Amino acid sequence: MKTKKILIIIFGILTLGLGIVALKSDDRNFEISKQLNIYATLFRDINMLYVDEIKPEDLVTESINAMLNSLDPYTIYYPESQTEDVKLMTTGEYAGIGAVISKRGEGIIIREPYKDSPADKAGLLPGDIIISIDGKTIKGKTSSEVSELLRGQPGKEILIKVKREGFEKPLEKKAIREKIQLPSVPYYGLITDSIGYIYLNSFTDKAATDVRKAIIDLKNQGAQSLVFDLRGNSGGLLEQAVEISNFFLPKGSKILATKGKVKQWDKEYIATKNPIVPDMPLAVLIDRGTASAAEIVSGAFQDYDRGVLIGERSFGKGLVQTVRDLAYNTKAKITTAKYYIPSGRCIQALDYSHRNPDGSVGKVPDSLITAYSTKGGRTVYDGGGISPDIQIEAENYARITQELVLRDLCFDFVNSYALQNPEISSIPNFVITDDIYSQFKNYLKERNFSYETESQRTLEKLIKTAKAEKYYDTAKNQLDSLQKDFTHSIDRDMEVFKKEISSFLAEQFMQRYYYLGGIIEYKVLHDKEVKKAVEILENPAEYQKLLKK
Image (tube, rainbow, N blue to C red):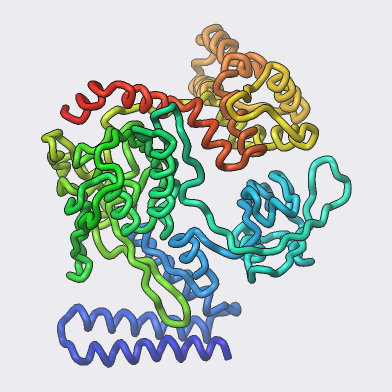
């Protein structure tokens, strides 16, 4: 019956489409109707004749996703079961227990319970391995499937069985689902007596309200200049970006223009209100994760010479998506336009409209990069994200540090430590002591931690090649000497790279004991980009000089 219903729906849509097409005679519409007809007949035959039983819903969804993947990564289909994801994306709100989960091997673990969430109140801890939810085993399920089980009607109790380090038997935790509101501003505060700091992590429908509140509160606390952190902010609602830009830019300023194939997407967005802080000195932090709406804001500030941008070149997403309602409670997020910031540039970095012969996507070529000018006459460029006014290169971490983080060994150690130590020093006073670091080294030894460096792998490949080509005997002494030099010691590497390993460990401690707000507060105290921003804001002459280059 379900298969028959889907076929009726498909043919119904096609019939309607063909009826509309009949009103037009151009080649394009004929081609559309032709291809839809081919698809429908193919689907019908596969459903009737394919050797194994198929699920029509899954087959259609996969075909839709394959079609959209040929366009760009931002045009996405949401079946009825995933429409809550659209709500989360636009509002930051969902009903559930308030915890980040992730896949670990064959299981699913609690990665981070939000502070004061149902998960937090129920006593779920980072590192807990989920066994079952309301009696249903989660064995073999993906993190998305487990997430669906954790979400549901607010006010309903949910029973979660977990395995925890140090406990022989599984623990049962009862949580009552609530409406979870993810904060768009998880932290703000004063860095110095006169410099405020705001971290904005997303442009949900409450972002402008949250930023406005933070600005006013910081002003009341004595802030005379501001560090606005947009690092890792992947964007969100365009309208929120316009409103937040208007907090700093004069009424009547053009924030951006959008241009699409359909004329209804051609629009200019103008600041409609008087700004809250028209003259407050501003430093904006950006990185490779700053994208979309976050680039609209940082790009507008740069084009109007309104603030100094510090960090790395931004992601380069100059495309606008529109959420469309489809049949049977499904939705699609479709790229409908490109956006252009005040100087006239589009900062889209990847050219999805001109793919390489193998289907890969290349960057906009240098030959097509165009120079533009800010309001004050500074030269800026399109086609590759937004370049900061002060470039600070990302850290290159040692291989041992990468392995410790990728294998979750910092995460696991801190969770183990926390089970024995319920409290640590306050955020400003916390440091990785020699005692904690020694415990971490012992923890790694107990787990037989080892890794191979890229240098070792390259050398082993060279030795293998030398033997195959019969050069090994003549170069044996040199190769043996290199092998000795490149053989690393875990103990030695732990000391050589102690500073950067301790930095990652400290952040993990902050997240475990003080949640998301704690890790941001800690990073503000130790972050080189923040320190550079403070240095610039405390030097008015240098600040003005950067904006007039």
